Image (cartoon, rainbow, N blue to C red; front, side):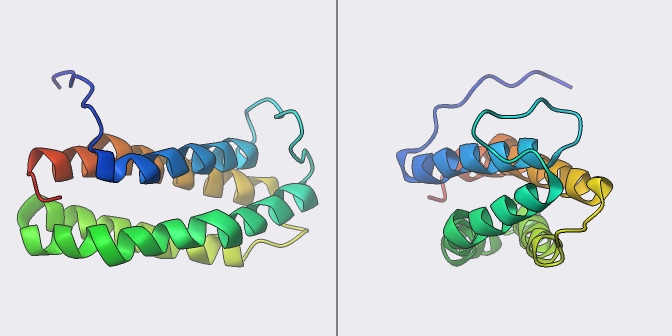
Length: 139
């Protein structure tokens, strides 16, 4: 596979990319094989409470912006972008459900799986979906 050169982010996507940074911090917090972050919870009940708060305060609105703005653009463009839109929509629902199902006694593996899912989702959006949106000049 050829290595892609970094692509300057379209200014319209910059706010969403910045929000992705917070999502990656949440993903790292939930994963079991990463060091603790200073000032963030370190136990399961704390991580669950943090994840639910982050969802309500940031992630929910972020998903809604992507779903009301970028998903329709992608679907109209068809082809690869429509396929990506279906994937993003499906993953948003999976992440919503996983966060809703978290509770104070959730297994560490459950949090780890959610953290990994969230990380791969954000990486897909940043590295593939946003790139495709820009390269297809549909913004």
